[in-house]
Length: 538
Ligand code: GLN
Image 1 (cartoon, rainbow, N blue to C red):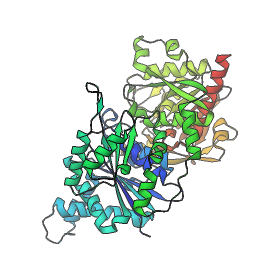
Image 2 (tube, protein in one colour):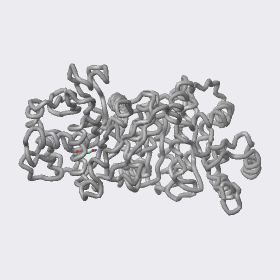
Image 3 (cartoon, rainbow, N blue to C red):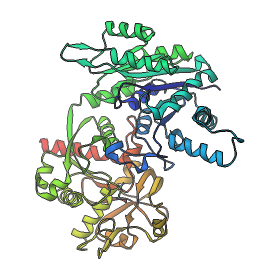
Image 4 (tube, rainbow, N blue to C red):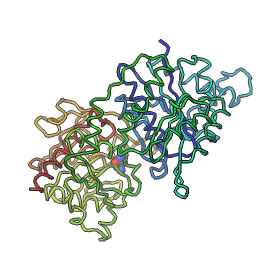
């Protein structure tokens, strides 16, 4: 069956939230349709795995181990779909393929050029995915802004798509920006007009324009922009600022976006947002709030913890509580600028997320110790598990100086270490455990009751592991290794008996959390934090 293509481009400036916009458009069509999101990114890295999170935001990891742009997180959270790494198309991947094809003689003596070879390769890639996945709707987001030199081939490829699959199977949605100019007290459409003109120049007439901006668009502004952009005013959608990103599908729906696109694509469709709307209300207007201390080192850049933050909100929505974050820069604990007790003041749960390197980790360990001793709900993610093991070994098992060899390679007690079977690979550099792995859950355990399945499957992105030499020492001192790999070598989850909630996971559980399906360990954590809140409130 011929799928429908919805193509999302952006203009004026980056950071307008094109990923959430694309995911929200998809969400409107989820009912009864299989949606395949594809993201095209202009950079020459094959994937963002090697990029600094401060520059690029969080690296999202898929079931198949693909390291992809954080927009895939939005797609999965909104569309409840397990994406594949081949759905992420970068210039790096395309150029790699073109050059290797050239070496293999695919082009029979031709001069290899951007037009047509690179563009053809992009289209081929997309149609291969369509053949494999047989989606009803293909949602293609083009990274960056129209006019960027590095996205030019992607924009041209999606322009050509309409010629191939027909006008009733293609819809172009463009996200633009309408600034409010304080000095004149007006919304200004000129940047958007220029932006739409640029889109016309490259041969695309948008079917829908979504206007980002602080406030809802007025009828007058819609009409003005419609006139300049040669679009029907009803196809200009207000994409104003919202309290939570989960409001976007609702706003787009009210603005008539689903109807416009259904009509354009000849798609009989019923939007279903009842449960979604209820959960969104819980996030926006909770009757109670819990405060979670998020302890890290990139605390100045929320994008590096995007999925953790979303997972907390999902868990809050399902527990009927709002989640408020208290950012703890753990280097401040080390320098004494912030005491542990100050950090915990007003806090109902402590979360140590994933991380790399030594900066701030003694501060994290001090917070883990406080969580354990003062019975504050604790959730450790990846590094947060490793540091909980280090703390427990040092302070409960009596292994003074225990450490992870990532930080102290010559520690006497290497309780977190590279496994001997990994060492050979270190030299080759391919050392990360990436993607989904299964954990066999201990019965009885808190983790087992939260998952309510014998096996949990979560995604990983790390090098180090709990050293198997210490498994028994940990057990003997009362730590429950509540999730283990099938062969018993890898610790996947730990917990402490008798503690209201002290659970950590070697995986990144935040990556599988979705608004309509929160991750069990996040759900349990917020439940425990909300119980802590009611206790403290009394
Ligand atoms: N630095 C640790 C490791 O490489 C943890 C990584 C993480 O938290 N993602 O194993």
